[in-house]
Length: 410
Image (cartoon, rainbow, N blue to C red; front, side):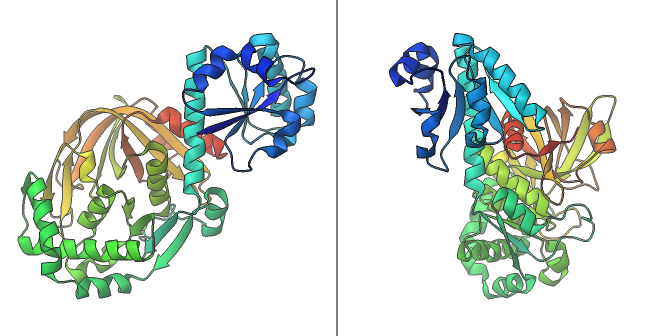
């Protein structure tokens, strides 16, 4: 990994002197990056898509920094270890930038703190770059009840670099009908072998669900899709199965897959994969307890990889097959990128306290105690679907969303 430090200093620029003056920090960074100290007057030599940060090497560079403001990558990050009055200079520069109503962040502290902040900063930068060119398949149209979960394709592509590709549900039906039970028999057996039990269903139902999985998988492969959302409710009656198992298995193979044609949630799921390198679970809040600051979540498309065990059951409507997963207790993160332009977000870490199993709810059901107030869901929500991630990624997600100039909702 290359890290270009746009170095602001006074007097004659001497790279070795700069390195020696900040050796403690730079030598620690060299454990993670190939460091390139670039004098600010030579910044044009840095590759346009390279990872770069403004390095305030000492005081007295305030004027030079604001005169060369245009070369700083935005949102602006200033690195200052405090040596040579660099922190004081950074504070003055940051105040000038904020006066222009622009975002700026100062990375400062002990060496290990600075290194960790830069690693998180780089993780967000890499995820943003990885999203560019990603292809999201949209099979069918969003469910009619998702009145606040639409995305403007053009604006989303401009902000995130992703492309949405529409596919007719007729194409899925055609492929489904061309796939025989024998073609999915082995995979169906493997799924049945790995589950804890199969309840209230039949082998025939499993085969139909696996044929739908195969049909969607073929569309993803042939069209080089990086993620897919499928509004399966519209054709469940015609196919006599649902897309729940198909989407769960796609999530398990590393292809983010969402239901109901929810464009905001599938994009959030893709962000989760690129940033956190893990699967996420699209879930509905089903009950909120303000007194305990907890909420219950449920849905039917969880990846088996997120569970410690799972059952196969018909979905809530009694159609097809769904994964009823048991998720280990522990730290989790709840995340949603929303708004028609995908420029707002909510994120909170929390703790998964228990798995629940209530009637008249989607199959995988959990209760989470959040670290942020649950009143967000009642006062200022970004729709119903939110993404649950195992582990605490709040810091990484905040950095990622801030780098992409998104506004947090609380």
